[in-house]
Image 1 (tube, rainbow, N blue to C red):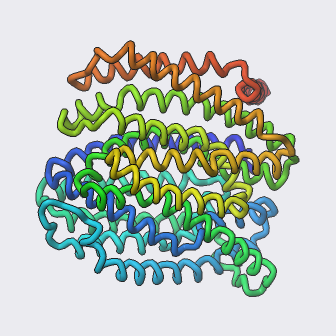
Image 2 (cartoon, one colour):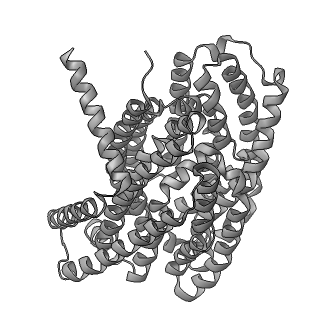
Length: 514
């Protein structure tokens, strides 16, 4: 029996939330143990390795995005031969990518000690890096199979596997830190569990789509398909390079301009914002395949109807997340790690600003990936990346870590923040983006006023333990939820969502009565 788009989306969201809760708890426990056993410099080192290796992942030329996009139509048409042909082609591609990343990764070794800026020399730096590199290279194993599950709205299966293996990984890594204080063992466990996760997920994909093993398909038999994929890849390449460099240079610039230890201190604030953002990202990533289906089958009015619905969800979630982060970040760091780990108010403002943009643009990015719009936005992303790097260095020298983070917000605001909506509305909704920009400005105003008022009311309440922090978080969280639901309840998108929920409940009741 064919499962509806809505049901698949809800499955992906519910499993995603469970995974996020488990992952959040494990991450904070693991990071706490890491800081107390290895210290801030090794924490900063982890952040630098992550950024360097993320830059190396540009070698996939955007295939991860293009691959999911190319699966939507054959899945909708149930074209098993074409799906098998795509899987066979992507297998070859990712084998080449893994080799390319490994070779490029080795070429970076001579420059490691120029990037890492510590008061004392870190021994075995190159060995640590090689273990991290191995983790990235092995992550390309079998990804061509698991992406098929994601494109077919079955990402909850991949998440379930990842949740179980991640739990085992974190427990083993914590034990390695407590018992041996060994960073190499910590990295080795991560690589080994990553391979196991990929093997299990790959086997699951084969069970769901047995024909990808048994149909002897080769994309070379469909020259037109292969050419379209390669053309798509060329378009994605500039976009992929730009977005990767944009997001993966902050830690490197902070390390060079300021220090590696500063990367570790900033990463605590960044991790908190990322965990909060994942709440929204789970909701929208679960919708990507469904949106791809809408784009493939529906006309512009239906596409816009769906966009307005998820945009209202985004405004509510964005307000709650951004307000909560701004008012609770310092308190959380103070209770979790101590006063010495609390950074300046300016940094909190900078991270809050970036969190807002990352949050409020989620629906736009969702449609961008589902429509393949990245093909037409690649040059604006390249401009944003160049602007971000230049501003990061300049503002980093003037304002420190906060300057580097402010640079990202300024680069976003002056480039794709205004360009991508105009393109999406013109190409896929046949409408002007004017109403969208008014909605964004209204959300900015509501969020800014809420933060200012909230800070004035809670400034004197500084939690000294987890219980007090929990009370403050509940008060701020509930107040934000009530405020944003009240503000957006009557909007077009929210009313669409309410009508859809009522219709879903009515259908379930009718089924139970039969």
